[in-house]
Structures are given as structure tokens and as C-alpha cells.
Amino acid sequence: MLITDYFCNHLLNPEWDPVDFEPEEERFEILRQPVECIRAICLAPRGFNVPNSWTFFLSTSEEDMTAVRLNCQPSYEVDATFLENGFKAKIMFQRKSTLVPPHGQLTFVLSVNPGFTVGDIHELIVTNNRHKYEIDDEGWKCRTWVYDQIDLFNQHGIFADQDEVALVNEGIQKRWPGEFPDPLETGTYYG
Image (cartoon, rainbow, N blue to C red; front, top):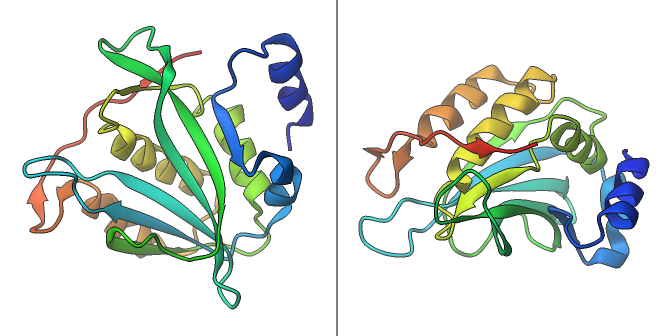
């Protein structure tokens, strides 16, 4: 875990840290949680002809039905530097008492090799500057961010089943319901 990064972000740049934990006081407990599997979840569209949003649920206990939601969303606080009409994204780690959200349209389960924690996921994102992302004000580019993280996690040996990875990579490039092709836009990272 990058404790020094956490303290440097808060002490040297207290006005902006793109990573949030909910609840904040459980940050270190959340980071210590094991990851049993990762669910990539396509959320129901907010309207006709609107792309789906995507999120992750990192299962911390299948038996107790607990998870940490890993979500990329517009901050609405800090304007984007490179993306026109957008914001710097917030990357949220939120403790949940469910394995899937109630408004999920489709769920892809990705098996995880043993031994990984939420802290390992956090560290991969931060050390690879994947927490420094710019997103449109509607949040439509969160789908691209999720796709990019699947690739990052796969490169670092988190996923146990490559067929599951191929299936979610194909699924994320479609609009649901209906499985209509919906090509990804290029993501905008800074830093």
C-alpha cells in the first residue's frame, strides 16, 4: 500500500485527491480486505440511446455478501485539463453489503488468483496513474476506464481465467440491453 502517497496527497496537496474511500474512516480496513472475485457490472442506461455506465464490485466475502465498489465518476469539483467539457474523475472505493447493485443490467464475474487485496488493486491503480483520469460530465467515459483497468489487472496476474476476461472485454463494447455494438472512446489520463 502506498501510505506515503496518501500522506503526501493530503499534506502537500490537500485541496485535491482523486481517490476517495467511503466511509473515509474505514480506509485502511477497506484496503486490507481480501478480493475473492471481481464483478464488472453494466448499469442500466439512464435513457434511450445513452451508453451504459460500468462499475466494479470487488467481492470481499461471497459468504457474507460484502464487497467494495470501485467506481469512476465525474468529480464536478475540478475541471478537466485536456478533455473539453469534462471534469477530473473521482475514483471511489465504497464498502457495500451486497455483491451487485440493484440497478445492474448485466454482471460479468472475473475469477481472481488467491492472495490479492483491495490494497493491491488500489496500489496498481495509483502506481500506474490510472486514478488520474478525465471524464465527461455525463460520466459516459467510465466504461473506458473500467475497460482499461481490466487490462491493467490482467497484465499483473490478478485474473485466473482468460476466457472470462475475453468475455467481459467483448461485453463492455456493447450497449445493453440488446447487445448493440458500442465502440469505446479513447480515455483521457493526466499526470
